[in-house]
Image (cartoon, rainbow, N blue to C red; front, side, top):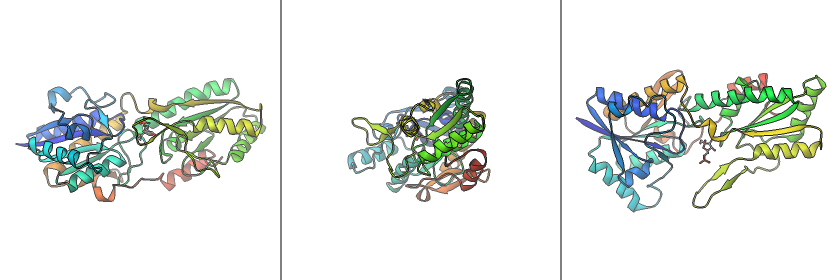
Length: 347
Ligand code: F6P
């Protein structure tokens, strides 16, 4: 009888529990036990785990978040004691492989674990959809649906009050959510980190809509966007955390539009933030996550470690972790092209 470990790393997203359940169900079919490590790699080097089986996972398919908890901890980043402790825990549990559900940086940590002798299979998740080597990640579909619904709701109030409504979506490095939700929600302008924002061009588009009798405008802006001539992202640092929490580019855009034409527009900003990460996964995410979980177990048991499960052209497949780690996936050129048709993506 085999045994595998599983963990959820980085930020949460809808569909993590479906992936855990998918892995447990396939493992049970293959007479393999599953150990869930709590709070990502932290649970591995601190040896905090819970046994997982069909009885404690059957009802988690549609639940948001992760029953294991999430963290972006990386024990292989220079601290040998933590790395050794992680390897020791893996051996102590007599595991055959470890399934790491995570985003970009967690796939890098997964590769480090593999290089330290822990056989790893990755499962890509993030609402940002920017993991290299897969067409889609767990959580993206749900986040886009949530953002699109927010745009629908904001549109009716923007229309009733002739407002210029700025909707700030998540998406740290690339504009996958902004572009997809912008198309789905019928946004008038979509601004993303891919292209620095030209505020005077945005103003021109709003004016030209007004000239055509459209008193309201919906602008979707990805949180990671920057302004032309000033490549600075908006957000805040918190003590003890090594990265910036992004937020504020929508408000900065409102300030710049106000400065462009003082008093002309009723500017309103909505930051939809973590609403995009919470709540139950969409049906598409439930199916994707369940299938990723099952395939990851097959790879773990059949010698496919060192890989990340992936979707390519609609089929579940694998990509080597070394081709994924340290890379980000920019918004697909075809999607951007189509977004130009439906919205003014450059303002
Ligand atoms: O990577 C997913 C994501 O939701 C990004 O879109 C966002 O910038 C980040 O995580 C937010 O994480 P935190 O809550 O730690 O700031």
